[in-house]
Length: 502
Image (tube, rainbow, N blue to C red):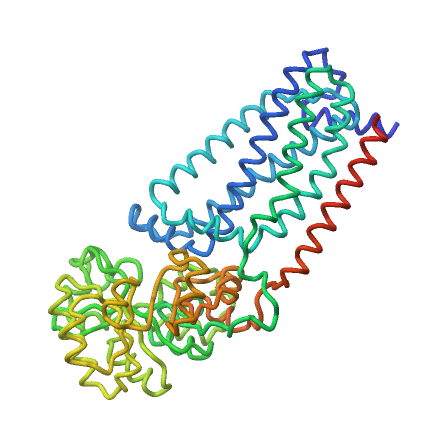
């Protein structure tokens, strides 16, 4: 009775009918079962890509804002759609396997076929979009495998062991030619899964005593998860995280005073200020088109509460929300005073229409402040020679290894995916400081910690400050022991299942 109920439910969910289906060709059902398996695998891979690139979600949201002038968490929309698609495909595959286990022919309903087509279209469009608009993100995927591959392999061995029951059943009822094809395919897949640890490399496969020191934290525009970016509140909140440096973006106002703002194209004030309401005749203006007094009359905090870019506003107290609501655009001098007070370094990009001349004015403004020159990290490549002559006390930071060697520098600042872990270790052995940006996710921070990064620029200093050890480390010999044990156990279980089916 219970088995009949299971059959009826299975048919209803997979084939969308409850009566015994008419006899159809088994080949047709198997063909759609194969399609479903492939689409499920594709959707899982796409979901994996979305999850590992979540670290750089701000880039997607920024691109959406540039195109639509609307600040929405576009990446979260993508994640939700991908999660629904993946759940649907995986559940459908489980129902298909359940039908096979009950001896049913898995006849897929046409409605499911339509949804599978939509799913494939969505994944293909997503991969195409990443390749065309976000190509620099692809290196993150193989990099993430250095954190997940050991555990994915263990999971793959488990899945292979479970699925082997269905493979063996198909093998025993198949014809002679099909038996050979099934056997060869299964052995090739099994060998690939069992032996792939030979090619798995991870910096976290390391003896505990060899683990490098925890990377220092640099606040990316302050602490933008806790306060509006590039405001004094944001930098004060980052001090609470224990950052060793502020990372910011400097522009020059119409009256030649350096101020802090990231967006620098036409309409650059639209995202983070109320320029539409304050200066309705200048909504497309850049920061460089206004005087510092005009800039500081704008509200630079209300947008943070309205858009909640990191879904953290709910964690703020009423007083913190009121403070955030009343933030303004700071001058560089305000930040330098805060940095001097707390002995924190300042690292900045220079976004200006005339980089060379504006670099001169920026250097003069820094020298006219009372900050210790050694706390200033000079990153802009423009006028570096002038800066070295005018301010030899500044620490020169390079975004290119060749330029660093030519300039005799000892500090690199690169995107986290632009250096291999082997290269990071090599540079650290040469006593070269390596800062990597922008690192927000714990898994990525853990990998870079194992690799020996000196510091990371982060939006989530409030989260990473509480990471006291990498997510995982494992001695190489211990990993080999676990790997071989899991493979041997799986092989023994599959042999027993094969004999049982035979």
